[in-house]
Length: 182
Image 1 (cartoon, rainbow, N blue to C red):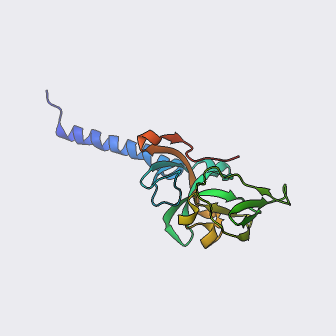
Image 2: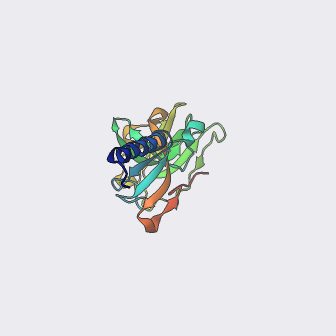
Image 3: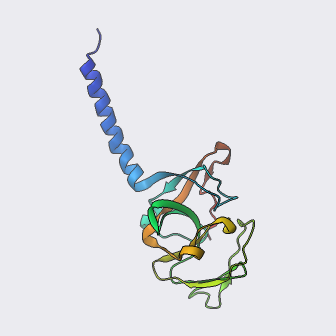
């Protein structure tokens, strides 16, 4: 006996609805794909690498120094950027000839940040005081990165999530890729 075609379409419709009900909330609230574009995070992230972004963690916590985050570019929120968190809310970020120093309530005289992920430093010099809802983010490839040095601190409302998985290329698969949080 051959099944009726309308039963087949009914089953396909039910399957599709169930899939949408399961996948859509995960995609909207928990994780989303991100494709790296550009050279700003080299050598740790290359253009065209495929990442899964953890959107849930920052609902219960905040970005930590050294984490790689994905955010909406403040000057064009339809564009997404990937950068590393350097300065946290209420801190002062000082770059003196490429050397990063952070001042905060625990270290009023400041402490230097070790950056083993940087291959080629810049000679930039600046001081930036962050508000209680701002982060200072930098690309790992400082000479080829549009980051907080250029467009200012990142307001926390633009943070989407952190890099959770690097899926492609397969030979560079990694959980929490590029994470140097301490």
